[in-house]
Picture (cartoon, rainbow, N blue to C red):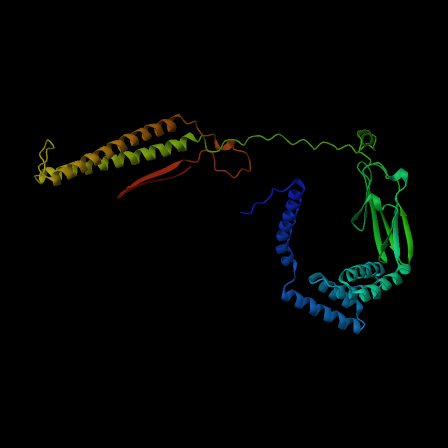
Length: 366
């Protein structure tokens, strides 16, 4: 029977390292496959590359460069980058073409394409004398705490301060900011080979508004107060107190309640008489069949409702009469303000109350 010896400490560590490496490669494999362009994307990249070559042959370099750039973005390739760098050189973007040829040389060396590497390095070397470089100089007095620089909106780290960086010709902006200081910005135009230096000055401290400055400012013109408005006098009462019309409404509703209660009382008596005359109930309310019981119950219910409505109507009528009697008298017509549009003070109050089949109504003018 075979037996296995236990792993020593060093062998165990080597085994764990091997397993970790295999696990990492396994995890990275799907991501690598996902990064590969699809067939449709490769077809689009080829079509863009062919259009770029045709435009270059026709001398339309400015139109060809975006084609190569998009093709390389979809499906990066050494040949595409070489053609893109050649296109950038022809439209004057020397720095971009120079770094492109250097990338082609590095990629060709990794791929074993020695001839392409040689050509790319030669192209890059030929462009070096034509490079334009921008150097941002920060003197000691300007290198304050928290100072941050940017070139064309891209942060420039402290290690790049004083380094001449190749840039394409054209306009470039250099900006500097620091906490508690005024920001600074300068525009630099690069139009020929060589080094262009820009020096960052010592930033000025930010000015803070002070109350003393505001108080020492020129005195403002005195603003005159608005003219006083004449006192507003309440208009004289027109038409007397509101209690009188409320009394009218109360009396009217009370009359309606009295009338409705009376009618319901007669209806209840008529229903009970129907039960007794038909022989369904006796005079004392004892019924011998279901019809009599139903008629008696209807009569009692209608009578109760009539009683409640009658009492409520009486209360409303009495309350309305009290309001009417105790209301103050209306002022004389001559006391009304001149030019007023209201009715004269002695205009009468009118109300009308009516009863109809199954309804009651009241109307009035005040």
